Image 1 (tube, rainbow, N blue to C red):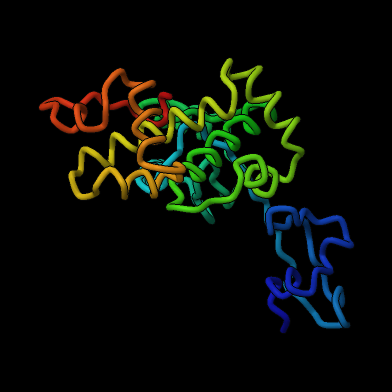
Image 2 (cartoon, one colour; image 1 turned 180 degrees about the horizontal axis):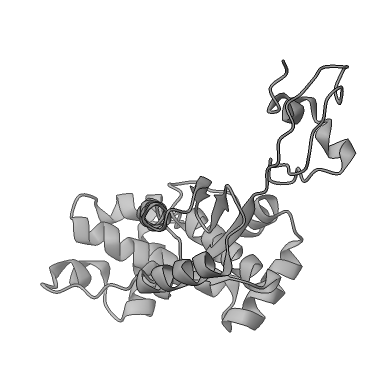
Length: 230
């Protein structure tokens, strides 16, 4: 008996109209469908929901806990997205919506909102790479599989800020985080964040915060922002 999961590796179910973009399929598979092998008839319907403000591993953990609490079965949860085993009922959708809002998340319904959120998550991921990193525009094109000009225009229109400016603010916020830990020198932080030199890092930091990295480190109460609120 052939496991229906083999259909993905053989990539044959795509030829028969099954959804394959996200590695899931739905429909009915009858006997003698593949190589004359009898397969048990099975119905499978999944639903993909896109979620705003998922920006870290803890967010994934919280969303999983919400789904578990509501009894909503899921296949996977990753930054910005959850793949559910079954299509939700209206009642389940409303309960999930309210539970996510309580934790600072939000279900994205439009294609544009989803694309902008995916761009935002990718920028944060790029920001938190260490040391030498690919050019931001190249990284976003490769990650989102779209032309950078289209990505940039859409992001600026919806968020009222350029991608470059948003990425800089995220880098400065990450710098605050690293400085607060007190484990790295400013030279190390500059390298981690991908600045060309400690002097360049210090200059950008002061321009955005009004104080030098050293002054920020000496503050008793350090002013920080949530990265999903930037």
